[in-house]
Image 1 (cartoon, rainbow, N blue to C red):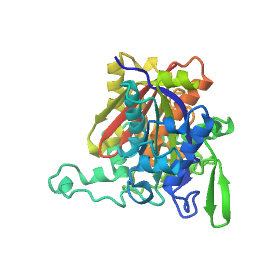
Image 2: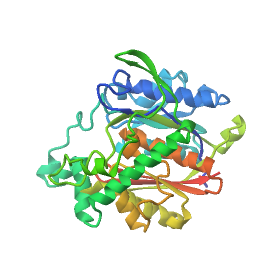
Image 3: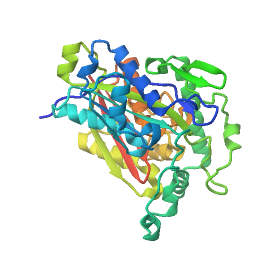
Length: 390
């Protein structure tokens, strides 16, 4: 019999743009992660730092300032003490989501009581794919099509498989992401989990406290005027896809015993999850079978879910998911606070943000009982996690 793993709190730094004048151009990736760990413990002062059982941290590019067994490095850098262990993992875009699942599993089997789990990606310092060396057999043995190794091309392939998903529908979804993000910012939604970060810049030190990537002035006309960099007359553009970004964030998970001992107030618990594989050439379809498997495992239907936070790597994969489950592009229970098209997608970090937004939805909607976080994952995978109100 397994125990419950409770979500206590989650924080992240503002998401920056991965470019020379972006927020974090002069900031180390591990320092971004350290900031979130320290903020989590400052917000939960009843939790002794030395009682943290593990630090599970994800990064896709596990080199440089994202290397050196990241979880253990962060435990030392954040001042948790040398008795606190940690480790690093990689499941590309679902890195932080996998870290959270692993941490929850350790709690569920009774091995641990308090775990910090999250992710970081500094795409300005480590551009996507720049430091990897795919085995030549992928192509020489025709294990995958060359398009599978370029995420934008996989999104164009998804359009080929779903000709009913037009450029116009994807731009409509992208505009909605910008509008909902702007409203969430105005309503203080992100204030519950975004913590300010002091950064160096050309003009000197400054504090950043708002996500850098959203474009609130986006219009249907401005989206329609963008061209696709992946295919002549293609559908995927910078306007209906996630950006290249820097960011870090993590969550504090606890057992029932730790909740009672330290007087914690969890908002939800991790109920179940599913990871699946799909064709690498259409990796964006991953959330569909992952969600299907999760619903089958739990005996639920999509109507039983009150909120779904889906990573918006590309609008086409989100629209494909909505179509599959019979929901309109403007469904109010899918990404109610916007998503990665507006906020950005620092790869291994994004799953932590999705969990924070479900927790925030629960806090603002007492009637909500269940939420799902779901993502597509590079090289052909999908992930889905079911959260339940405590």
